[in-house]
Image (tube, one colour):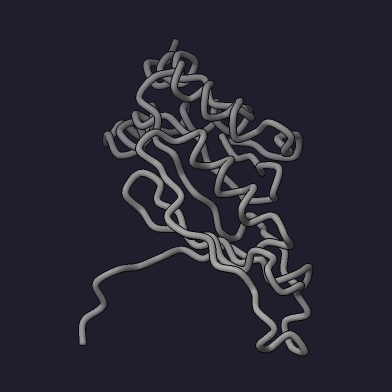
Length: 165
């Protein structure tokens, strides 16, 4: 039987519903689909309070996500991240500011940040891929060098670097 959907499941320690509301509040065309609660069944294994939120399912930009309140055993890391390709600096700034609110952008570079739940995001200009794939090795090198010095991406500065200015 062929797979017809692929859903990303994010593990949280009691914050799945808060995270789903946070993300659906940032991205247009997003919605929470359902909340499912823990029951007494399996409580000796899962250790969660019956009636507390077990799973939140939401849709964001046409993609399905599940937030699972599984406990403190697992943490998010930069090994998995979500990349947002932005067409304008205004769009990039908005996502950077909203996703970064209460999170950690201090240790990141090249458009990476961790939101307040520890989920990693890459907020990047869509044009970056064009610069890197242009065939202009000098331009791509200058863009890479400029990008490596940035935390939040600056489209105008990357464009100037690509053009050699």
